[in-house]
Length: 147
Image (cartoon, rainbow, N blue to C red; front, side):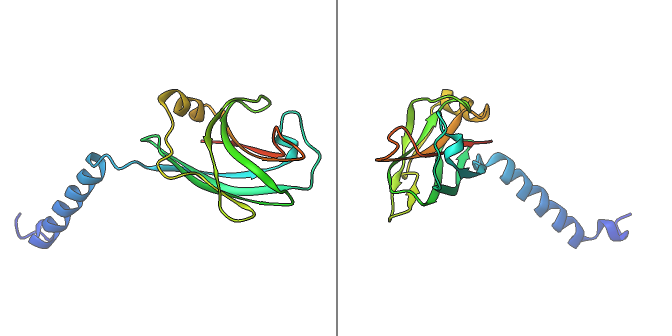
């Protein structure tokens, strides 16, 4: 049987390497990110806001609870932006303030991390990102962050 092509040294070496790499990937503890695309609008605010402002971006949340991402806006002079905890149709507390980078871009700060309870809220679809303005201090545009 050792002369059979399936048992050649090169095949066995490839198989052993594949198994080793797979084992490293599974056992490495590398956190896989779930990237959520967000599209912000005034209609999603609570109460809804009539505005031509809009925003779009991505928010990534890793299994280790670390958060990263950016949101870019247009048609709004944003004064603040945050990730909040609440279901669609409800308002909730700020859990991560975003940093302003330029006129129309907001970035999740380095080392941002959710608590276990906030991560469970994220898994349930109960986190949202919004951008506030002087005209709409409670928030002008918003989007739920979907897992």
